[in-house]
Each structure stands twice: as C-alpha cells, then as structure tokens.
Image (cartoon, rainbow, N blue to C red; front, side, top):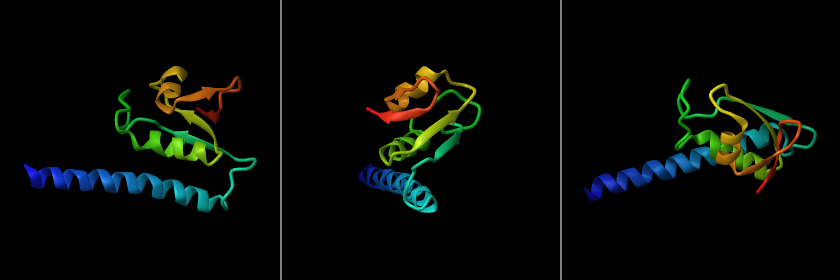
Amino acid sequence: MAVFVAKWNQVLVINYWTRNRITEKIVEKLFGTFSNKKLAILGFSFKAIIKDTRDSSVIQICKNLLVEGARLEIYYLKFAKGSIEIDLKVAYSINGEFDSYI
C-alpha cells in the first residue's frame, strides 16, 4: 500500500507541475504580458461532453492565468455562468468576461 501511495503522490506532483508549465508556456508565447489580450477557453471539464469538473486541469490553468492578469472568455455548453464562476471563484463582469480574481 505504501508503494501505491508514493506513486500516487508522484502523479499528483506531475499533474501540478504540468498545469503550471502550461501556464508558463502561454505567458511566454504572449510575450510575458496579457495587456490588451483576451484568451478564449474552449471547454472546461476534464472530459468532453460531461458536466463534471472535478480535478479538471483547466480550472487551475485558468486560475493561474487570471493571477497573471489574463482576461478569459470561457465557452462550454454544459455549464451556466454561475458554475464556472464557482469553480474559478471569480467575479463575473457585465460583459461576460472573467476579469478579476477573488
């Protein structure tokens, strides 16, 4: 059992590293700034065509991007604005863009 737990913990470490790496790559490709830029996020769950967002990497990547100052426009047919807002814990502006981090 201890071996399984150790391996599982490594999976979690790799997942965390990967989420941060994706954020870093996006920031790098946009020349280190999100000034006057809006990013579209297409999809939000961890699998296509489902409502379940538990452990979705997209949530943490979006949170990281918001911390970096990104403006996000999230499109996902299975969710209402409120559920994405809850997952990201952000204030939703009138124009439908996630533009502040709480």
